[in-house]
Length: 262
Image 1 (cartoon, one colour):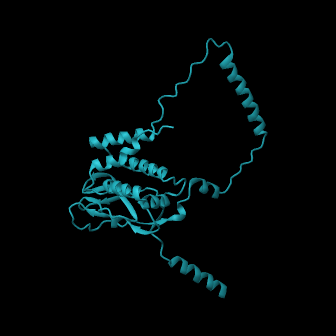
Image 2 (cartoon, one colour; image 1 turned 45 degrees about the vertical axis):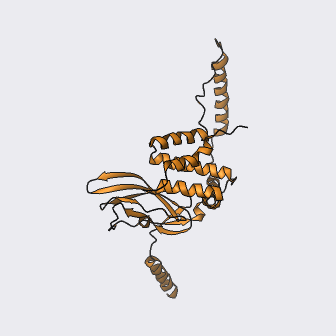
Image 3 (cartoon, one colour; image 1 turned 45 degrees about the horizontal axis):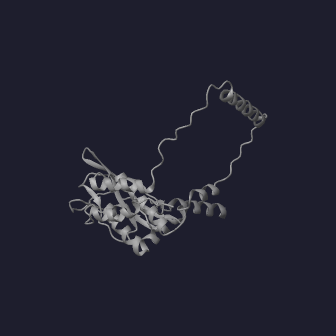
């Protein structure tokens, strides 16, 4: 009887525990959130150096009586944060009724893909009926048939396969972004891609190797040269009315647009 009472009490306490309403996200990986708000137009709060969460608005859709915002954010360090703390009204008024969206930066989720695959349980399917012997025989027959198609009474040599144009180099892609900046045609998606390419350049410049993104961001921001450039680029990208000029961003990108010759 006493055991049954203890079991019931434990179950009651478990059910009364408050459920967490926060979302666990990995550090350094861009996440997306959809925010619907009927109040004044929303913008990203002014950028502050060392902020724990980088936020940008990728797209805004007008609906009847409200706006739908596609908000992207990157958590830089562990902790629990609220997305609405990084949003402000464009006209400076209060954002009354803006929904709460809490998330927790979890360093344990920032493992690389290979580590996650190694942690999964190995699955095995046993197939009977001489399946493997049959598939091997069919494979041999298919190879014989293919060789006959290729070589039997072949009128002329096969034409060389056109691989198409080569993939653009990192310098070529950055030169395209320079042209877009000068023509003021850089979209939100282009800005995100340009930021990732610059981070790649700075990782290579500091020879960081395969370190996690959160550690790479710390090393890049702490370096004398790349730290100032990172701060300037992020302020230009994420601040709605950044005083950083396009010419300053061009000066940051230009050294990486030259092809490296060996």
